[in-house]
Length: 505
Image (cartoon, rainbow, N blue to C red; front, top):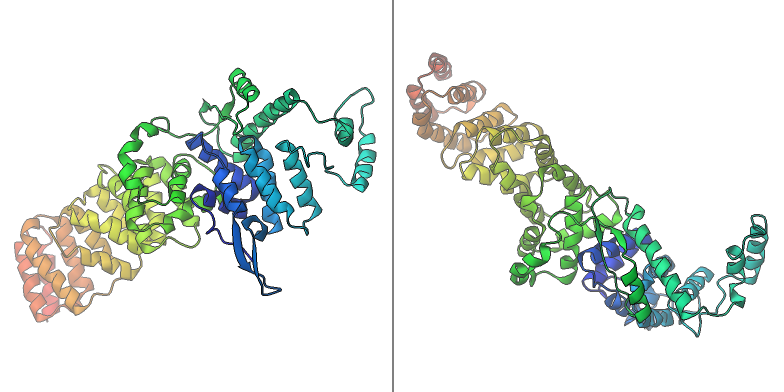
């Protein structure tokens, strides 16, 4: 009976998904990033969801079984969950952990390893009733003592000797517990925010991470020692809280788990995070949005302002998603991520922008045609820089039927020199024009020819039409083409007239 994630909501679902797909490391990364976005973030809702009763049909007995949700998960998930809570228990509400352990203890058929993890977590949170349970079986204790004797330093005290005899020791005092918690907290933060995340060195910031039980001694300890947390926060992270009110209305249409993913996607967009399962979990929310929600999400992420040098890295993440983005999702993302950057070009596009555009166009050609190429053509902003990029897409990324789609887009509105280059590139490629489409094209040629009397680009395009598509030229088309040639004032006029004369004969 594989449980679904419908029992979780918002950030809890994101964290549960990370545990399922990325294990302890994936959950640590998601937890660290969520705390980076909101220092008050806690796990109470997550634990309550795990403890909530759920009814399932038992495959063996065919009887309806009602148990806590955590009991329906696999043993691997339970191990990952207990290990994760062991690492972050300083920020987890004690009553929530005890309730979860009580639910898990109801399962009699638990593996010894799970019982050991349960007992360890009971010690972590100071459960007096079960905190004295030995983590090691008698046989394991004998073997481990024998092994440690080989490496034991006779002059050293504590260490392995203290650990192996811990079942004989008294429960540590409050001061010792506070000290241990403080030390463990530093170790967890250093592991979670530093080397485990596998990210480049970034700006270091000071953060106060209050414990959930909030005892006086722990607060004093935190005041005395600042925790230096290595956490990538990206540009403008500190000022985002001041800008948040303007998004309140639009945020209301976003589900909680999508809101929770915003800081994580921002980190992927702004940094050079290596691809892992937690990234896939985070980016999958893109396919869960409708068009309005996705537009709000793109605005919150600031896709239109994303630096060009980060685009190839982010696009590689999008291309690694499985399943692929839907047509509508890809269209909205391409429009927000690329359209503004391409329209603002005044010189040839940089390598990063070209790589991003061509990679997305190759995977999502139709969304690229509709969300990027068509707006550029319709707005009449096909300058030389835009034309050069569009010609690359026509030659290297688009299939014949997609080139035909772009060709149809050019038959509406006014032409300019940049658009002539794009049309010429399409005509030079493999493209099959119907008689009706060719007739529309010749009519457009006739209407545009007075504006390009001295244009060599227009004359060369006309020559391509007369030589490559001569079989499409009907009597009606001949008249339109003859009219076009009559306006031409370039040195190619005689060549055009000769080409048309060969067709008529």
